Every structure is written in structure tokens, then in C-alpha cells.
Length: 483
Image (cartoon, rainbow, N blue to C red):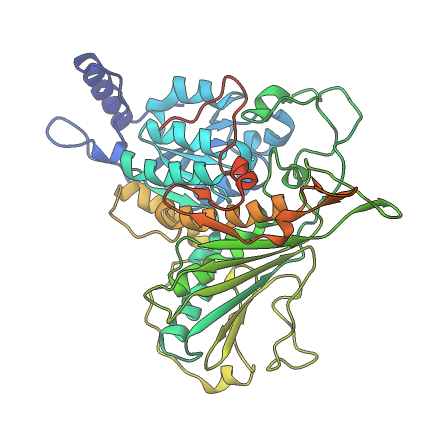
């Protein structure tokens, strides 16, 4: 790839600075300038880590902004990367993201991370430590500890960040905020959220087959931080979401899309407690299965959030997945669509209710007749392109520099949202762990009958220690999270 003059100047600046300082440092593009240096250009160069599937569409949207060049591609699986490699023939392709960052960091400005959940944190952190802006697919991280670390790192390294929950840039969530601000539904005390996910197998044992690793896939590098296991079929490209070592279940897949609206409308931050129940899987009559590697087929988690400056009291949030839905509100007609049929968000206030679909799209007041009667002035600025504009918004933010533009899902907002999702997963995971009874035979499930109390400052469950094992994973040897 031919370098522009500004890129060459940046290289010379970095080279001179590194020789004069005690430690090597990559200087972010937005701080370059001044006497003797070229001003920032009107474009950024993006490097993609994980460029198949969702990563492929992310890169396409960045390129369509007209202000981002896709300069580098990285994927552990040549099969998944094929389309992106063909779409960006001038981009240099790497298999190992660590090698790409080491060799090419002077030649790009920002990094897009769209890999399985278990590797988000190490990849995003490494990029931020080099002064690179980062776009990270949802959920931001696999563990609560990682989410907190990345949130703090974004401030420390002063980089522009965005999580890939594009509904946060949509018109729908802004309409919900305007209705709430106008007092249309009064004070909200309860939020109900539901989804038909998972749409991949869960509640199953780890496969016993040991097929050969497909040509073009670096299996060890795909595993990354996760414990070593032999390769199995039907894990890549998407079913890894149902395995705790790699994914975060239905919550990780859709929680950031569905919980974001309540977070924005009510200014929620960190939950104070959580409890959950999960579906049981029986392998024979009277024989309950225990599959600790796999997420359950369905679950119901209930989070409590403290009073905020936009509520009069605590907020109770219900999350339901696996096709479980809350009771239909009485204001909704018997044949009227509840949410979008598969997913939905319902705000319950003292004066009324409002609901929306996935991504907070298609917001509606209940009963639906109110939507013709209620007119509220538009007060919030819309993101150009609505949800699709989420990508260009990040590109524009990177060009402007840290703190110069308001983004829809920077880590300071995405971090607490991600933590809430992962905190619900704490309760879901312990709900299905059997414990031998102290008297008599058999097992019981104390986690399913316990409300987990959360010490937010210390990131710790105070009354059920078994849950704390999932707050921060132990990485496989050779993998670490910098700070």
C-alpha cells in the first residue's frame, strides 16, 4: 500500500520520538501536527481483526463512509476472510493480529475488532496501548473485569471508542427518550426485555468427535485466551456463542441491542443485585443433565438498578431468552404485535407504557392509538443514517480526535452496559450448578434460589462466592491483558 505524505511524516516523527525517549511509544494520529508536521488528513486507515461474518459488514460500512480506507486485514481463518480479502485487494492480510500490530502499527489509525467474545479484550487493549482508536463488536468483552479494564483504558490512552450496538445510533431510542422526558409514561419502575435467541444449540454436552482442523484455520490462535481443547465441528463461524469458554450466550448476542435503550432512557449504570432461573435439561426420565461448558437453552434474569437522576426509585429489569416472553400488557390488543414477534423492550411507567423492537426500532406508545394522539417536539439530534450511521459516526470521531465528537456507544457508556449483561450471566451460570445435599442423597441448586448481591467497587459478589469465578477468567498460559 502506497503511503501518503502525512503517513511518511508520521513515520519519521515516531522514529525520532522513539530514539529520544526511554520507551517506545506510538503517537495517535490526532495529536500530530504543528510546526514541521502535516495536519491530520480527512481520512483514517482501518485495520480489521476478524474480517468474516459481522467483521465483513463492519468493514463495508466503514468504507462506505467515504472517510476510511481498509488498509489491513487479519483473520485466523482464511475461509472466513475470503470475501474481505477479495473486496479490499490492496489491503495487506495477516493471520496473527499480534504480528499485524507489531509490524504495521505506524501505518493505520484505528482497529475494528469482530472476533469471538473471548478475545475481544486482549485485541482491543493491545490496539489502545498503541494509541489506536477501536471499534469492538458487542458485547464489549467476555468478562466483567475485562469490561472495566477497557473502560478505564479508553480514558488512559485517550482513544475514540465505539461498541458495535448500532441501535444506539438509531432514531428509535431517541424517540423513547423524548417521550420519557415529556412525562408521557410517568416514572418508569420496571423494564421487560425478551428475545427468541439462542438460535444455535445450547444445553448440550461438548462434542466427543475429534475431526481434523480444516485447512486455512489456525485453531490454536482462534482459541486465544480460552483453555486448549481439540477442534470440533459446528463451532465456527457462529455456534461458539453457546459455549461459555468463547461466548456469552443470548445475553451477549442481543443484550447490548436490547438493554441499551433502558440504559439511555433511564441513565442506568451498574446493577446492585441479580437473580436468575434457567431451563433444566433431562437426559432420561428423572435424570437431569449437567453441561457446564454450554449455556442453558433458556433463562430469566432479574436485575435491580439503584435510583438514578431520571427515576424516582430503583429499576427492576427482566431479561428473558429462549423464546420466553413476559405477559402481554393489557393495553395491547389480542392480535397486535408484541415487540417485533421475536424480541422486544417494554417500559412500564406510572402513567403508561412504551415498547420497541430489537435495536429499539419502531418505538410505540401503548395502547397503540396513543401514537396518533401524542405529539412531542423533537429535541434530540439524530445520527445521520440512523443505526447504519453508527459506523460513520465512529470514523468521524476518529478523524476529529479524542473528546471532540459525541458518540453513541463509547466505552464510558458501553462498559457499564456490558457489565450489566455479564452480571446477569453470573446468575445464569450459578443457577445450573449442582451441589451435593448435606443430608440425604442427590443434588440441589442453591444458585437458582439466591439473589446475588454486587459490590460494584470491588467487582465482587458478596454473598455467593462461587459466582466470583466468572467475574475474571484465568487466561490460557501465554495470554495476558495489559493495562
